[in-house]
Image 1: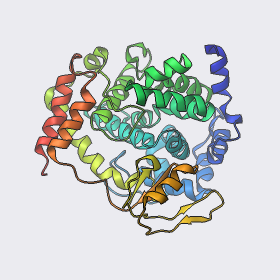
Image 2 (image 1 turned 90 degrees about the vertical axis):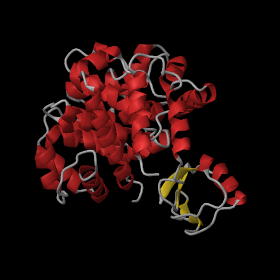
Image 3 (image 1 turned 135 degrees about the vertical axis):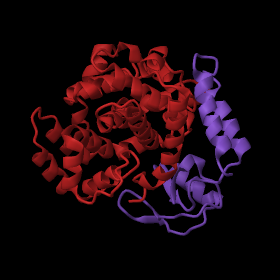
Length: 278
Length: 98
């Protein structure tokens, strides 16, 4: 299959019979270019599972709001439309994530937490939005796993067997990677650019043109999550930090030390928020 | 309670939730201490993971944590900056009260 055909297949994932029904319903809502916060709110409120998941994630260490958020409306107002849209997508693909790869949800959650911590340390304006980019950075693995379950299974087994990076196993099997697939699907789903680029370029951060800082944060958050050994994303190896990211973030050793320590402490609490206790 | 992939189950683990099939029928009850025969059965079915009792797994010693850290960094330790990143995590493990 050539790349163009692959892209078409990935973009038409909505039509798959195996797609989780909650995700199918959600896509019908979020693919609308203009959607109000009220529409999103009533969509969530109509689904008790979704409501409880959203509240769980909102109160998790991904955000670090000191007080607990108990109502959906409060969450929507605090986080804003883009964050809630992204988070909804994250919690809707939760089962598919677990099915694709046991541990991928934890990896994504870890990356969201690390993204927020780094963004805050850098004084960036919207750490919550960046953490959503962290939560969704591996969405391409989910769509590849949903669309091509057999072939993706082969790539997973290959990464395991040859002890190589998952992204290299994907390229061998498909000629594309989850970052490509994630970029395509996030354009199709009308994600804002500050989500598209971190998803598409988290392995090639120097290519991010419009939001290089956000992309750098997600790239580094991915490295830190793997370094902490939290969750599983297809292999057990820490990828190298791209020199562009190191320069872009320009963190002192003191900053790094504080980031790692806050991150590890948050992961210790994250166990309670893995959605696995439903 | 934690979720464990069926491939990684070991005999002696106690189910924190019943294992049910797609139509909701209970296959193995909550509280069952798994034997090899249960695990074989689970692995032959289309069930990917189950809930077992216990928290984040057995607590690891500092040596085990450091050995795992080494293993994770084995491919990229020689790349620029990676020794600094690794040292941050090593320092954190060293500072833990274990």
